[in-house]
Amino acid sequence: MSGREYYNRTLDLLRQHHEWFRKAIPLIASENVPSSGVREALVSDFGNRYAEGWPGERVYAGCTYIDEVELVCIELMKKLFQAEFVDVRPISGVVANLVLYTAFTNPGDVMMALSIPCGGHISMGKKKLGGTAGAVHDLAVEYLALDYDELNLDVEKTKKRVERLLDKGTPPKLVVFGGSVLPFPHPIEELADFFKKVGATVAYDAAHVAGLIACGCFQDPLREGADVVTLSTHKTLFGPQHGGVLSWEKHADKIRRATFPGMVSNHHLHAVAGVAIASAEMLEFGKEYGRQVIKNSKALGQALYERGFNVLAEHKGFTESHVLLADITKHGDGGTIEGQLENANIILNRNLLPWDIKEGRHFMHPGGIRMGTSEVTRLGMRESQMAEVAEFMKRVIIDKEDVDKVKDDVAEFRKDYQKVHYCFEDAAEAYEYIKIR
Ligand SMILES: *Cc1c(COP(=O)(O)O)cnc(C)c1O
Image (cartoon, rainbow, N blue to C red; front, top):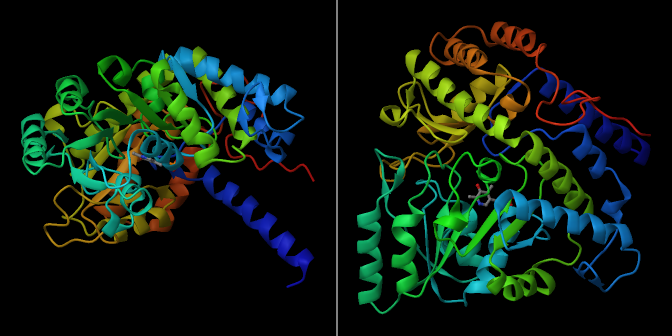
């Protein structure tokens, strides 16, 4: 292909992706759709600039407006999270976790977090798995205990594990609460003092639930005892892909230094501007949005359950956040089911269940699927639409109807949900392809 052909091909693929998403039901729990305001920030010239350092103390010229925007972003995040200190420079959730590890641990230290099948993220993973904590920062990762029925931490078992580590002379230096399957608030309050007494920094990875925390709809880790909170800005928080760290003034210097010069050089200034815009939208519309996300996830859980799906934690109303986990082993494996649903334009992901590895299942063909309701909520869907979504899933997986028929019906259903809600301006449709050539 010539340069021109590659150029056209790439732009054409982008356009096709947009066309596809207009007709699909987006249920990936870690994704969301940004507003027109956020998208405008992303194509601005900020994305072509450098601003190493802190606003007002940059080592580059040309930062007059960049500094102001970054200060606006910090001010907004301080308000939303009632945080004394905010660093908006980490360029993703993984980088935010690396900032955490760099600021609060030394290589070789013991860190505790959930295992991946139990809802932990690969950035908290052991060295042998190639996880960021183990493979990049050389932390010795030990697992927090999960209660499989409650889909939440087991406080007593976790304490016993810590005591065993103390007996071995290897106390944890860091505990990271939170995770990628986080349907219920973690018991930080019950465990924070216990961990602090043994000398551990208490952190909370809010990558998934940052938007729900910002609007006061989930838990409040800083008030419950967390020293540090790391986050992604694009999951339940509906900004561009980026990261952040929240903490207390007394930890500000270490975190700043870990971020720069430690973890970033340029920090994606267009994304910082996008985070400021999304945070402003969150300040105005967050409460309404967060409440609807949770109503929708509970409604989707109930509707799937009534149609024969084994959605976990039924006795607790399935979830208190945006995320749901279903054991799909009656119908096939998570990988195959993910593919079948994708063929009907229902986009979600396979997921390990807490007991999958013990039962010999693998992450490519796990026993579960994971769903989140942030993006469909942003598209204006409510509880009754969740029942329709569940029905589409049933037709594919349980009734084994022709996927092309379901796909057509999904596209028809989606026609009424093309705008982004919970934002100030919606001139462009949610997945409109914006051409500026
Ligand atoms: C998604 C996620 C991350 C990583 O976030 P990125 O912004 O994709 O780097 C970190 N921790 C948890 C718990 C996550 O779910």
